[in-house]
Amino acid sequence: MTATASKQISARTEGWAGGVNMRDALNQLAANQARRMENGVLDERGGFGKRLGMQSQGTFGVGADRILSQYVFYRGTSAPQILIHTTAGNLYYTTDPTAVPTVWTLITGGLSTTAPLSFETFNSLCFFSNGVDAYASWSGTTYVTYPTAPKGKYLRLWKDTMWVSGVSGAGLQDRVYSSAPGDATTFPVAAWVDIAKGDGDSVSALGTDGLFLIVFKLRRYMTIYDPVTFANRVVDYEKGCESHFSIIQFESTIYFLSRRGICKYVQDTPGEFISLNIDPLFDPAILNLNALSGAWAYTVGNRIGWCLPEAGSSSNTFQLEYYPRLGPLSPYGFRQIGPFNFHRMPAQNFVRWRYQSNERLFGGSNIANKYYWAYAPVGTDDGATFTAILETPAYDFGESLRTKYIRRINFLGRGRFTFQIKPNYGTGVSKTFYVDLTSTAKTWNTGVWNVGTWGPESVFRNQRIQPDAYARAFSFVFSDVEPGIGTTLVELGSKEYSLTQGEWALYGVWMEGAMLGVRS
Amino acid sequence: MALDARHMPVTRDHVQKWLDAYDARYTDDTQLRDWLQRRIDARLLPDTDINTSGRDDFEANSTPLIDMLMADLDSYDRHRQ
Image (cartoon, rainbow over all chains, first blue to last red; front, side, top):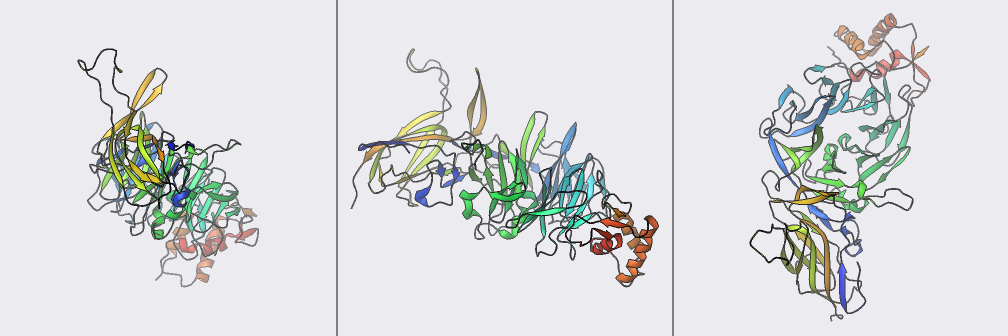
């Protein structure tokens, strides 16, 4: 926060590239962080923009059905298929998820209605297992079961071999099975190993960085480093992984959800927490610890997300997104921790699908038997208006005890939103303003030649208000109930591309006023 | 001779067929062990061991196949009278 030393003061915000900070005390937030963020994106570094909405692609099954797990089965040059496993015990596929309504074809029924399938692709087949039903494969047209294969909850492909774990049975909670090398349909009788046998924990997830197979339990994790002898070692004695579906690789790093936060896997050394600024989230009073096994990771754009369940809910109710590329660079050229923010999209799991010129994020609804296109060019979530919220830190202009008067505030942004002032670290709102930064097109026969500018108005606009506000410290809340969408511009040299974005975005706030005395 | 656990001719398919064939005839694991051992011997050289040098839960560098099979019986569909 830049402030002048005279009685007249002016200051500006420093953007919100720091993301949400739930951990630090009210008066300790960094200038580029936010106390609250929801339903917004940080793609334009330093700015905050309302996200796009969810478009329904139609229904599947009957009203009470929900998607337990889903997967994109890429098939080389053929169109990829999306497979969904529902709470009706049905496994469906579609070859065209962009169709509205999407047509789902049944692969098989009679599967578990609670245990989600884990999927892997190998040898042009999609393999899946959930620890209850027979391990099986799908070729795109033919469904085959392998009744003698180990029925494990977790599959992972490593070194051209299928690895299976999470098999039910006395003494099997530590066991990891291997298929024959190069053949995921055959399991040699002695191809298994117990990892940290009898430690009182159970295998909860399998991952891989290509070099090792990572065997996660709830309170620790190990790696198998030799696929022939199954030689293994402990990597982290202190933290484990809550959900097999929370493991995701993005660019050069593997991330996973542990009991106390999101971690980065570091080869051969204990993992590192990256969710430090949102530590309070991982509290049993906020998250349903008993449902964390269903936590679900996805990637969209240049960020990673996790669907998580709040306390009192058995399914995922909100999303946590992380921006690895927005982490600052250290003096040594290493990328540091990036920002987090939250969403409340009505979905409990997602897949990222790409085919020909399309790339989309699709989600399974947590409130209906619907399939959604997430971040679609719409302003509502399946017709329901949603609110984006940004609450800034409290600004005291460098003088905590003296009262300040804000005479004018200037906004740089786009779209329509509501602006509120919260004085003195309180929760109450003292002032509310409606800000309209939408642009309009100039029309012929209005205005005067050589006065002002011609052509359509800029997408990004300024607006000034006079809040006439007094306080020692000011927090600002930006929100909306707008159902529309907006646009932003990306300049490619001489050409401008207009991209559909959420209704509004905020890039900066400038304040001008006066420093007063100490009020008795 | 200790075989690599993943490159051996006895698979879970074989074991499940043997267990299914023994269905309703065995009464305890000692009899089952002997019965399975005879079938293993029909497919492998006698006293063929598995290389378990990389596994912390087996003390020896090699372990008889029948011991590994018996330790994993609970992962199969077993039928008892």
